[in-house]
Length: 208
Image (cartoon, rainbow, N blue to C red; front, side, top):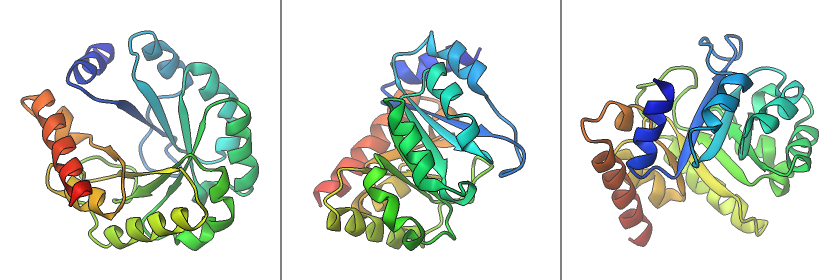
C-alpha cells in the first residue's frame, strides 16, 4: 500500500519524497525507520529526503545512509555537536540537511552553514500533519536567504508545514526552493494537478 502511494505521487510529478522519521520523544508521533526506507527504496527513483525528527540522530546516520537516503536532515535542537553530525553526513557521500523549528533562531546555526546543502525552515511546529502555515516564518525564510548569500552558499532553502497552492507563493517569494507538501497532495482528488498548481504558483512567485 505504501509503495503504491509513493508510485502515485512519483507518477504525478513529485521531485522528492520527503520522509519524516519520528521517535516519539522529540515529537509525539512514531513513524518509519531505516528498514521501511530500505524497503520503499526498491520502489522509487525519487530523491529520498529523510527528515530525522529524532533525538541523538548521530547514532543513526550510518543506518539511514545505508537504507537509501539521498539527503539526511537533522534538527539543530537535537544535536549537541551539530558540526560533527553534519560532517558525518557529508562523509557518507550524501547531502546534509539542517532543520530549524519555528522558535529556533538562525543565529544558532550561523557557524555551521558552510556544511549545509539544505536548510529546512519549519513553517509549523513538527510532529503532526495538516497544520496551518505560520506566517511569521516568511521573514525567517528571507533572512535565511540573505545569510546564505552572504557566505556564498549554494544550499537550498526548504520549507515544511502548511504548504499548499496559496502558501507556496509566499514561501517561494521569500527564497524557498524546495517545498514539502503533505496533506495538500495526498488528500487531493487529483494529485498531479495539486503538484502542478503548487509548482506553478511557486515559480511565478520566484519570477515576480
